[in-house]
Length: 242
Image 1 (spheres, one colour):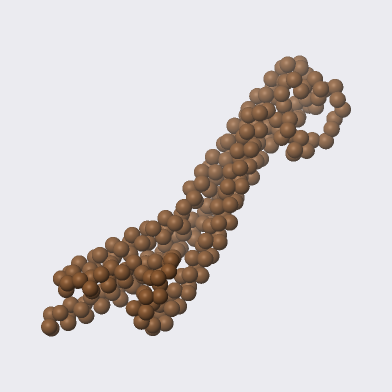
Image 2 (cartoon, helix red, strand yellow; image 1 turned 180 degrees about the vertical axis):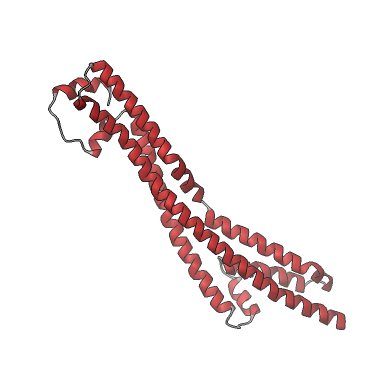
């Protein structure tokens, strides 16, 4: 509450204080803090909804791929089907490893000497890229969760300072004069918590989901690397026999 508003507040009868009226009568700095926190809250909810939908899509894609992969179908057919369209999750790992495998098969026999290492490197890079896509924008949630309450507290401190200046200007310590300004100041903290609490809960939940999917990708990479390792041994045995 600005000092110029105090005389009118003292002279006029008490009116109902709503959230909207508290925002309108707040100091400009407090208003900026409130609007910034509300904008951050909207941004966080957009990320939360987007990531929830993305994780559900990735989960379904992983389930479908594992079902097809372990059904006993030819890896060559599966690679031909997947390489012609965008992939995600385990399918991306499979396509990248098979691409490296086919390049080596079509090359000279000496390329099999380091094929296992190259396939493992390709799988590691693919996992890192998939995890990076899953983790994108999660840092925004962490930042809002940690900084939101302090930004709201800054607005509260500024509002209380303005209220004390108003009290000093009016020389009136009546609760009717003090309460509106303090309520406006505390409203900034409430908005800060409103933005930070869902962001913190969502960040912890989504990070846990990322860790589970990363473990699943790494498990598939180990299994598929073992399959290709056996194929490499068979090719090496045939080359030595020839």
